[in-house]
Image 1 (cartoon, rainbow, N blue to C red):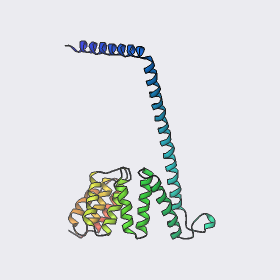
Image 2 (cartoon, one colour):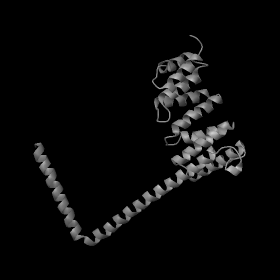
Image 3 (tube, rainbow, N blue to C red):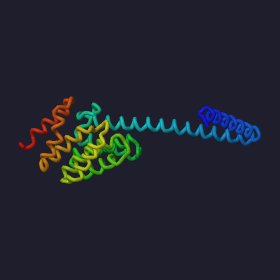
Image 4 (cartoon, rainbow, N blue to C red):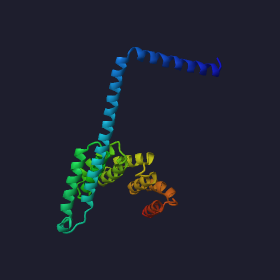
Length: 230
């Protein structure tokens, strides 16, 4: 059977099926009207969900913006809208990010809040809390998971958990993202391996010496210089 005949048959079949559908709707007009109403209700509900989600996202973004402003507010006189000391500001930021993460759990904004909770904990020397927060983000299906893995690797390395830190960095090299490039992960892995596996560290860094991105090439050269002579 040639292509034209198949095309004609396909067109004829469509026309026949369309006619059957129109005949059926004519014979079952009351049911069709009822089903049409059901479809309309489903569409309205879908639009409602869409606008609700849109509103929710706006609320989440506003909450995140407020938390970030607390985190970034300058230390100084409370009369000027600041905080009298670092401890007070950190306390306020901790509450703001914790509330956001709890209220909007599972969202991208909550992941950002968890990331900042990890950063605050690390700055304060609470490494167990930092590790816990970074793991939440690293295990999430968000764009910030790679950033959390990078931070988590540093925390783990500081705790002497070198094999797990190495595994995380190698996974970032294999799966680079917009936030963590392959080269950045390679430099961090080289730093981790330098004390025990300097040859492998050098192998990671050498190709990056001439990278067109200045930050990458400078970081590679700096870390190469810290390696023992061959």
